[in-house]
Amino acid sequence: MPVDRIRGAAGAFAVGALTVHLASTVLQNTPDSYNQDLRTFTGGWPIPGWRFFAPNPGVQNVHLLIREAPAGGGAPTPWRDVTPGVRHGWKQVLWNPGSRGPKALFDAMQQLSVMSANQADFGWVTQSLPYRLVFSASRAAAARDSSALQFLLMNVFPSAPPDQRMKPILTSEWIPLGSPAGAGKSIA
Image 1 (cartoon, rainbow, N blue to C red):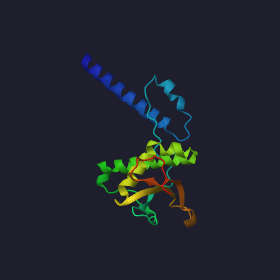
Image 2 (image 1 turned 30 degrees about the vertical axis):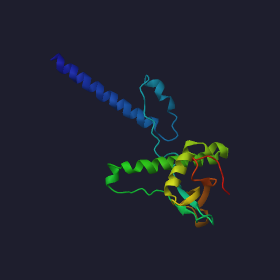
Image 3 (image 1 turned 90 degrees about the horizontal axis):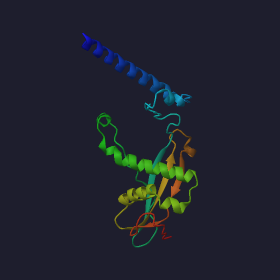
Image 4 (image 1 turned 135 degrees about the vertical axis):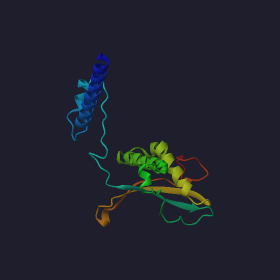
């Protein structure tokens, strides 16, 4: 019965390796982990480092607002929220390919928030890929007869007192719609 012993040993080794891997993963992902050196004890075996929402959970929503300049001149339109809505339902837990576009836009808006918070040069920001992506989303929501548009990123803190719920992050220059995104040309 050496074959049964080999199978038993292989099974025991697999269960042991899985147990060590799961225990290492739990230890690696404890809050304020001082276990960052666990990799030195695992012989190069990768340990997942999941942080999910901790230690900095999201406490604000980022909204995209636009206003357009009419083609014939005149006053700009009022600001309007064009943030894409994300459907939430039981089917989206299993299959939700429609979330990729809004997620990409959200990530771009978050990146612009980080640039703004770090006081990046506005000329550099307008040449960035996140700026171009947000402009493209804004352009898609603009009226066809607009000659230019301006977008605004706004942080909304739902749990804040009413007078402190909104904080502007970044306001673009007026962008002529006949030019490429981020050209930096202003019509004002």
